[in-house]
Amino acid sequence: MIKFLPFRALRYNLNLPLEKLIAPPYDVIQKEERDYFLSMHPYNITYLTLGDKHPTDYIEISKVFKEWINQGILVFEEKGYFLYKQEYQWGDKIDKMYGLLGILELQPLGENILPHERTFSGPKKDRLELLKELRANLEPIWGIYEDKEGKLSSLWKKIEKEKPLIKVTSWDYRGHYLWKINDESLINLIEEYLIGKKILIADGHHRYEASWLYYSETKDEKAKYILMLITDLYDPGVKLLPTHRIVSKEVQLNIEDLRNNFDVYLGENIDDLDLVFNPNKPFIYLLKDNRILKLVPNTSYINSRNNDASDLWWILPTTLLQEGVWEGILNTTESDLQEKGLIRFSHDLKELRKNINSNEFGYAFILPSIPIEIVYALAINRERLPQKSTYFYPKPASGFVLWKMDE
Image (cartoon, rainbow, N blue to C red; front, top):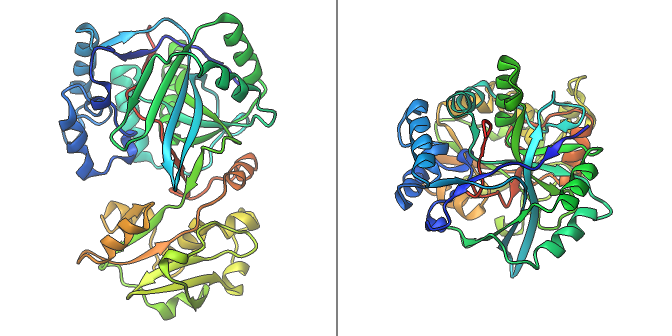
């Protein structure tokens, strides 16, 4: 059973320039971007989600958080849900995504709350320390529910006709709109409708697990919830982008070694690549020495499947890379490469090409995106994808609503 409840939100004072206070979720801000968002305004949300010290000073962040509340920089709203709409450029048109902000009652993962990616101890520990000091969620995690009949989406169309509480354009030219939902009949309808649903975690696995650890340690009923944005599986505004890997020149890769697990073909022009995963034709691309190579798993790779993995999981783009290249050929792991600073991630082919042309990086793996229906099906089957298998877009901006568990 799912309990997704209205809450007493904490938000910025509307007299402040909100467009300078919001930022991306903490875990998608690159190191070089951190200073940019910190410099936008002294009250930018990044001062709370990441802080301005390295390593992170959780006590200092907690002090800043309390000061902002005491000074009226952050103010409390009356209890309710929030409808959140984003408008963004997609190709030659403007697309929209709708979501609902509330607090989700925590429970063990797997039955009703479905994870889809593996997690690591470091990011979990980081968010747990922040949670302990602040006893607050500074930004929502993101969940996906299934609404085939469009019951809630039809409500959103009616609500958006009203004047929004917040309307702002962000750093990346997306439009953001928030409406407060405090009508008791609507609240009851939403709450009851979601009871029988399952929720897929799109973004925020580490934060969810950190919150569950905190609740399990404290048994504090006030800590039994997490701030979440939920969107409909069938909302056409939800996109899944591929996550490509750009690899340092220090990591030597021999093309002939790849033939142990792949049939290697000369690929297409980089602008004409097929970047949607098809289970009937699995592959990944390698960009090396100004050539695109298409890597198709061979019989040897297919027959080496781990008995704990399904046929579908074994041929996912990130599994092909993880099992077929990192572990199968280079005898390493992606997390190890990441810790050593030998790999970076990108969702944009232009950025990828720019990095490849630098002196730092030698080659890149270009991965097709995985359709959301496949991610959902694997999650239902309790199979977690390798980390950074998915990149859900558009990410909810941080700084619109926060939740303090003691209020």
